[in-house]
Image (tube, rainbow, N blue to C red; front, top):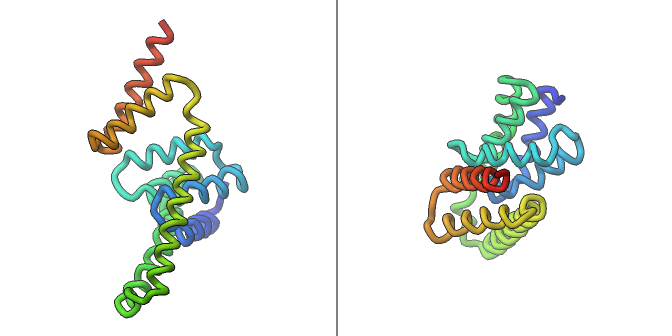
Length: 178
């Protein structure tokens, strides 16, 4: 179990180095909470991440709140959430103060282009890892294809995709059971 100070510092660190939103945070969470501290299993982390995706709000803050609550109830949720929010607040404030002056500077433009590419690589790494761990049979593949079609073609909300995937998995599980 982590103390309140440790929760704040852990999520401060994750918030400080998470560029690109909630998906880019998953490798850091996995490293810190699963590999280093062994506070969660990988499946537990993915479950919290899935719930965080389905609940209203920013996914990284939702996940930090869930994990903080699991560690130290309400106080843990507050400290983990504040730890996740504080770096963004500081960075955004600093950027807002200087961005107007340097926004069109070629070096700043190059740096942001590099950051975007790095974020895409982080997200691709997470997707590959999730694929390897979760697509185990034809039924999983069918659910994946349905989810991709609903997301990419129908442009359905992520919440409805998760609900649909859960329902299809339940139906497939019941059909296979009989």
